[in-house]
Image (cartoon, rainbow, N blue to C red; front, top):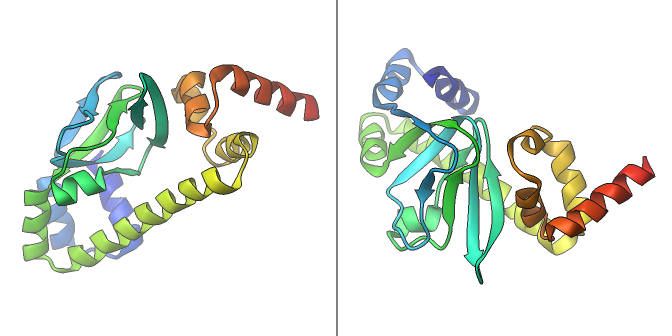
Length: 192
């Protein structure tokens, strides 16, 4: 399973065998059961995750309601960036939507790899640029698109998500109540 991470890194920047072996030696794979909370609001994040298989959801608890802000699936990084980097309490939760396999990383392992192989800092920067670009794109859709457009975009870009997570979480992610999502889905079906 750790080969997925090595392949991911190889697509960003070629690795020597020594570099690949160093990464492989630090990999810790965890099986996370559905419903497991990886990070609670108010906790300070100490770890980052790379999803090998499954789905991790990021959500906020606002007035007792869960507001889903992202889903992380295969080959995506799950990082509470502000909490991890600044060591401040997280404003959100991270939970496993389904049984998942993740690689767990922490700052000590990361710094050790940077010291041994400075090239990993470049790889890390490129990864964070991708993560930041994805987050910007998601935020932009909330400013420029209707919930129906966000739903259609999600269906086109991540169809597998609809098999993994309940509809009420999809509704929360696109910014509507479950009843409104039902109406959106009905309208879409009538158009086709």
